[in-house]
Length: 431
Image 1 (cartoon, one colour):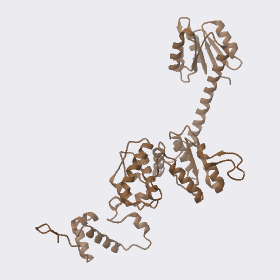
Image 2 (tube, rainbow, N blue to C red; image 1 turned 90 degrees about the vertical axis):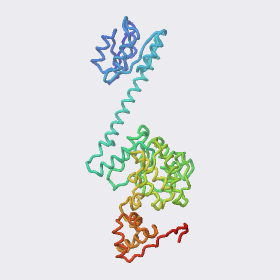
Image 3 (tube, rainbow, N blue to C red; image 1 turned 180 degrees about the vertical axis):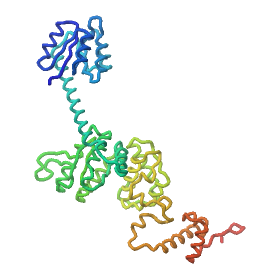
């Protein structure tokens, strides 16, 4: 089906000349005034409107305004005399595609119309493809009503606007790629490419070349320079499926890409992390990731900082950096709470946060290899609390989360001696 064009001019020879010029490639309608043009616009689906600025005593600008308000507005091009160029420019500001001056250069008119119609066609195709992608990968196609699925969908909506790396975990066939597409489509990167790489399907050498590309002559068979999938996905999203199947050497290179491509300089990623350094590092990472994700500077809630100080950080500074990025992305308020941190860090939360007796963490339980002796564990905790408070039963009971009377009873039952409290004589010297 050919594109349709409506030519509007009050001069018959202009209408006839443009009809002859265009009728081989387009379905052409003509009108001499606004009433006739409006009738055609309401009856036919017009792709392009070519109208003169002056239609006798009528104004072509009014016709363009009317056409642009239609449900599917046509491309509008104005014809005008040299003295009316300012008016034509005003028409473009109000939505017209372009203008041509009279006397008409027919070659220029033909080229301008062809370019405009082709642009409209590409827009329609792009819109149709985007709709197909949305229909296939949009959140509305992730079906289900379980609480777990709703939590997944909420997480997708939360992380999509961010620039963070996202790990999607799940059994085979649970829709990990569907979730990745949904994150891409909801992100600011959705106009760029979504590039999927199925890591398990390629040998280590081929996978490395596939991800990072290669230079000519890099290995046998590398006859020309080839860009990798990371470059192809520049500005968009790269989805690495079955990433756990990547061999260790490629994992190291991949980790370097994911960690160092940011403008932020890493802080000793392989150095031992000292507990006293954590608050300082956290402040730096917070500033960086809040800025990177276009969020106001967030603070850490006490429960979150407590968990960060309790966790052992086997991945050192790099793991702390990732945990803060996770918190920034997941936070919905002015503070990062314990709930916003990664699961491994949450498990290491302090006793008050985790609901366990003082001095006990979930991490400690996980590392236990022999059966727990609850009586001995309780005895040890009480002894530690008394030692930490210099035998102050009230303070120890508060630390343990039990009443003073209960603590007295347990001390007697377990034959625990209270640590002697330090006293001060009248002169101010300590005994």
